[in-house]
Length: 497
Image 1: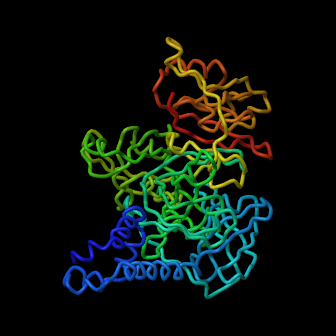
Image 2: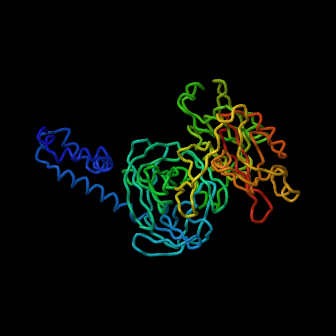
Image 3: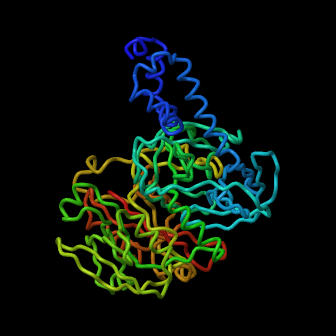
């Protein structure tokens, strides 16, 4: 064994494995008998040369890639003149991708690993950014989906997709973190989109990878590659994927109903940090950041600060469990919710409402690491952030209340009719880099809420703003007038002044 360790080729191999990590773990999985020889009989390994170990690693890696390649497809969106990726979900022709990959199109072109191109019909869920493409083919090779709740930082990750149109490209890396949440602006719909509990990876993801799989070393899907955080619009090792469990729940709904039917409790959950769990006296749960007045949750007695630990008999470990529960339970259904308040466990019955179409997403705080906005619709997956001017910090304005950074005016009678609250203020301009800008507010939108207060007019907004101080968090409600002019698509975003 000592002679092997003195071999400079072996040391070079170990250094490479320490940096990349992927090959060795694949080797561990694919060659257990070789590992047994190393650990149980060191003398038997002295004849193995460094290049032979490299050959084993190389073989295991290529075998894994060959196994998953037939399950990955290239997608062309002719209407958007863009392209992305997808992964085969079922043998009877269902393919999972990102909704922003197929945005604006009811049909897209799908190219398989064999080179065959067919047309597929689109089923979409803009809220989750998951879509299905149904092709008229059978006997496809679906991928296996892993339980994304069991994914841990440091585990190996393999991304497959079509970066910059180079279909069926493979990159290797790790799971960098989990539980990332943030907001990206959807230029196609002209609205902000919330993402929750994303997996972060350093496997290179670039424009065109969206919709493709993020795999573990067994070749199982742990996530759907969705966006990156980058000053350049290309990979700098900070990519994000929608967890496989969420993708599966949405896909199954789309297959069964042709759309996603969501229950609605009317609250905003957030995953808890370790110190918060300790303070609350729980080992897991999702804290309630906001409860809408007269919502199903409010009527059932749930309030801000409560910790939800169980819904319909299933444990709630993170906010995504709360959101996924709304995908598996229907409007009108009554579910049992267990929650903790002041370290006392309580149980209540919540009769779920219908998910309001005016609510696009209830979004978490906009965190700097995912403060990313795409420069163009298909310079995805949400990479480059446009240049911004910064506004003076609150510390530079001593004595002044915090500002949203918007120029507003009263609504006209016609605009009031288009507001879901029949009230609010019209945004005429947004200061680059301001709180409103970072939250996704654009000129032409209507501000409807600040905190739990429904905004009636400009004076009302100024009065409410005066109640806050720098560093405070609250919820900002705003919306975009639809093309038909009949409604406002409303968004709720947690902001920090």
